[in-house]
Image (cartoon, rainbow over all chains, first blue to last red; front, side, top):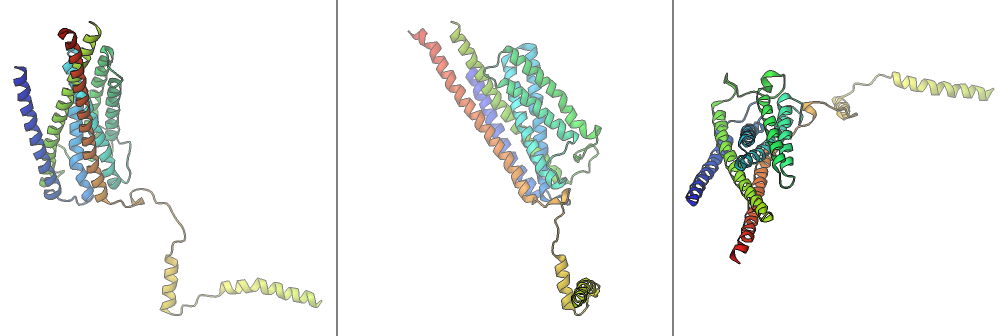
Length: 232
Length: 106
C-alpha cells in the first residue's frame, strides 16, 4: 500500500518536474523573443520577469512555512514541522534572489544599488526573520523547545508578508507598482511573459518545497531511530 | 648716483613690463588660432564629482546577464544542498536500520 502511494507520488513529482521545465523554456522564449524591450529602461527591465515571480515564490515559501508551523503548534505532528522547515528554506532562497536581482535593476533605473524604500526594507526584514528561523533550526538536532520557538518565529514572519505587499500603497516609496487592479501598466506581450513566469515559478516553488520536506521527514525518521537505539 | 638711476630703471621695467603684457589684447588673427584655443579650453582642467544616476553608465545587458546568472546559480546550489542532505540522510537511515536489526538477527 505504502509502495503504491510512493509510486503515485513519484509519478506526480515527475509530471510536475517536466511541466515546470517546459514552462521555464516557454517563459524564457516569451521574455526574450515575444516581450518587447521597455522604452525607458531598455533591456535591463527584463529582470522584472524573474524578479517579481521570485517575490511571489518567496510569499509561497514563507506562507507554507507559517502554515506548517501553525499546524505543528496545534498537532505536534513532525510532518508539519518538516513542511515548516521546507517552506522557510525555499522562501529564503527566493528572498535572496529578490534581494540580489532587485539592486541590479535599481542600479540602472534609480542610480543606486539600494535605498531604504518601504518595500525593500520590509522584504529585507522578512528575509532576516526567516534567516533567524533557519539559524535556530540548524543548531544541531532541534529539540521540542527549539521547534516550537522556531514555529512562533515563522508565524511572526507571516505578519510581515502583507506589509511587503501593501507597503507601496500605504507609504511613500520609489518602488514601481505596474501590476495593479487598474491595469494598463504592462503591454499585452509583457503580461504573457510575466503570467508564464508566475506559473513556472509556482511549479518550481512547489517542487522545491516537496523535495526539501521529503528530506526533512527522512531526517526526522533518522532522529527517531537514533533515539530508539539510545533508549533500549 | 648712476647705480641709483640704474636700479630705478630696472625696478620700473620689472613693474611695467608684466602690466603691459597683461593689458595687451589678444589678437584675433585666423580661424586656425581660434580652433587651437578652443581645443585647449576643452581639455579637462579639473575633476568634479557628479552625484546621482548620471554618475556612470553601466550596461543594462551586463546587469541582466548577472541577474539571470544569480537566479540559476542559486537554484543550482540549493538543489545540490538538497541532494547532499538526501544522500547523507539515506545513508544514516540505512546504518541505523542495520544497527536496530543486528541484535534481532543474533
